[in-house]
Structures are given as structure tokens and as C-alpha cells.
Length: 272
Image 1 (tube, rainbow, N blue to C red):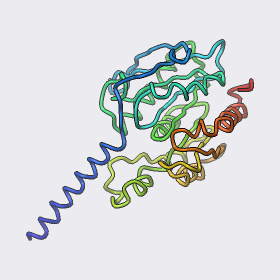
Image 2 (image 1 turned 90 degrees about the horizontal axis):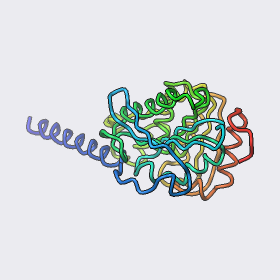
Image 3 (image 1 turned 180 degrees about the vertical axis):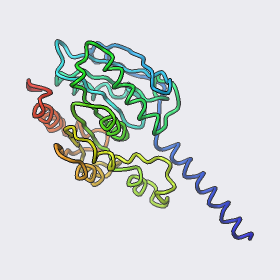
Image 4 (image 1 turned 90 degrees about the vertical axis):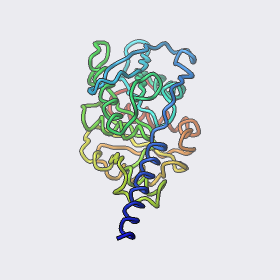
């Protein structure tokens, strides 16, 4: 009996340790917003909007000069906040797109505590906010997510009608990532699911997958696995560089690849 009680106690401690690891490695928000689009010469609107569970979120709408081809919802990765994504967002702005950068709950000036379900609610709220504006073409909204944000972008494309989905440096599922980061933890103990692989099977919108073959954080194989699971229409753009700077290391390939995809589905017309 003592051995059984000891095993149960050890299992409880192990589960608590797994929950601690999830809490400290999946979401790494920062409250300090260190840059804005204005710092690189871009005018923007600082907006606040509500989620379905009444969290107040912050976002920046950077509008393209003249009439924009489409509007891209920028769903960032697990660390920092939108202030760390200004330079990258400018790449999409140069393609003639409106850019809506938003912070998940607990990030930057957004209220709340980050969770998987909360992140999905936040992406939906961003989409619904854009749909409430008369100056946005509601039929030309792009769901874009990078790294952890890929899970939010996939979920958004599953639950809302979007013009297309772009997933960059993301993964097939939290279970697959867990085998890479926490190989000693059985996947059934993970509370976070982020089952992009299952969700992507149901998304019929055009899809672009971008991944660096040198990605040291999310293995290239997991990005390719997600692409292979997805139904057509779809494209895969292989780049080089690290997890966070592949878009700079492969800048021309990256811009040409994204623009080529958007041009093919009729969301941009002029060259980048």
C-alpha cells in the first residue's frame, strides 16, 4: 500500500511539473511595448476591441496608402508583443496590404492571462473587429500566423471565412512539438493540444506554408507534415535562416514567394 501511495504521489508531482513547464514555456508575454509602426515611418490606428469572453485587447491597424488589396491579421509567436513585430509587418505593408497586428490576452496592453483557448478567442475577436469596420473589405481578410501564432491562424481559418491562410514556422500539433521539447513527457499529459494537423484537414481556403530548413526551434519536418496533411489549394515555400530571422535571411525569396501566392489567388496585382 505504501508503494502504491508513493507512486500516486510521484505521479501527481510529475503532472504538476508538466503543468509548470507548459505555463513557463508556451506563452512568454511582455508588457513593455518598445516600438510602434511610427518608429519606421508608418501611420497607424491604436485600437481596442473585446473578445467573446469580455477581455479587452489592443491592436494596431496599419493601412496601406490608397485602396488596399486585402487586410492581413498578424498573429505573432509566443514571446514579446506586437512591438517586436513592426519591421516584419512592414514587409507585408510593402505588398499593398493593410496590416492588423494584435496582442493576445496578457501581451502588451491586452488584458487577461494567455491560454490556448484564449488565444483562439483573441484571433476570432480580431477578425470580427475588422468585419465591423466599413473601410475594410470583408471578403479579403488574410489569416497569417507565425510559430505559435500559426495555431491561432489555423483555428481562425477553420471558424471564420477568410480569403486565405498563411502559416509560417509552425507545427503539426502540440503533441508533436512536445516530443521534440519534452521527449520524456507522454503526450496524453499535455493540457495544451493545438492540433493544427486535425484542423487543417477541414480548411478549404487557399493555403501557404512557409518554413526554413534551418529552423532550430520548430523542426522543418513538422511544418512539412502540416502542409502534407492540408487539402488543396496549397503551396509550400522553403526558405533558409533561423526560426526568427528566416524572412530576413531569405528576404527576396520570402517576399517573392508570399507575393506570388497572393497574386495567384487574386489578392495583389502590382509587383512588390
